[in-house]
Length: 449
Image (cartoon, rainbow, N blue to C red; front, side, top):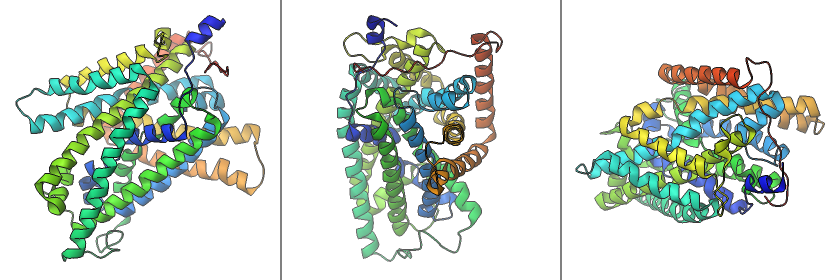
């Protein structure tokens, strides 16, 4: 590769640990803790904090494996696609990238559609399509301007969401202190209705709230000292959200120990009115809308970088590896994801959200297995600690994520399987009937990144 072409196909390192963490927090979205709280409370029979603790353990295992792989393959972006391809073969690596595209590529659509649905409910005279466009255009423009600009915007968006959550927690504790709600400090974790089946069912759903932290590995080529920064950022983000989700669930069940809501899908607004009245409920609604915008901003950024990597490798059209001349951002992928969001005009939230988790859980399983394969082939360290870190924890992560994958509803598994079959067909075309491997990752390590 010539210096000129190399210059046009590398990204600029501008992100520090705090910038990567903020993008990760925006990606997962703090207010998802309130957006889904009613569902988790109902499924867990009123023990939502315990369900989130179970999920936290599963996500920590997976974040650990991602961190191990990020520290080994730190020269290039690519996430699960890179790790599985390097450790388990390029064909399986391609299919992993293809599977996770189902997640990355369509999550922005779902995020924008949810935000538009909230706005349409408040302003029914304005068509849904207007709100979808209102979400897509500014996020696309911000991401074209550059990841550093997007990170600065996310500081403000995340700060507002956290402020809403802090106020909600304070009002909830004050309400609990001043009213006899029938709850105790420990009853949200364990009560007479607690069953293992209810907890695991709720934990499987609660795991969806964490999805997105893995996308931080897609920022490797734009991060200072990625070998240390990316693993640390992933664990920080997962731990942060674990504490946040458990805390929000705990205070929610202190003021509402039961499982009955007028509308479980909008339980956050019911809880907000209970502890702070209509004015605070309006603030929570505003926070949810802002959270959707921040989430879409971060996810579109990460997804475009996966397209960039796969396009640069030639496993997808090379047009996707084209960068904006001045900003050095993957403009083709950013615009393509924005255009895909317009499909939301013809879908509802339930349909669009039903299949995106198939790819994520599949990738989580394979990344955990790749960590074990790396240890088996290279033995980077020895002793009991190495066995635990490179084998035991990843194996636990693979088992838990496989369970979550099999817990998806039949429609999600069917759509995911069809997407996988389409990927196998494309791989056959790309490799001329599997007679040659797909293009391999080109590892770039120049100072101009």
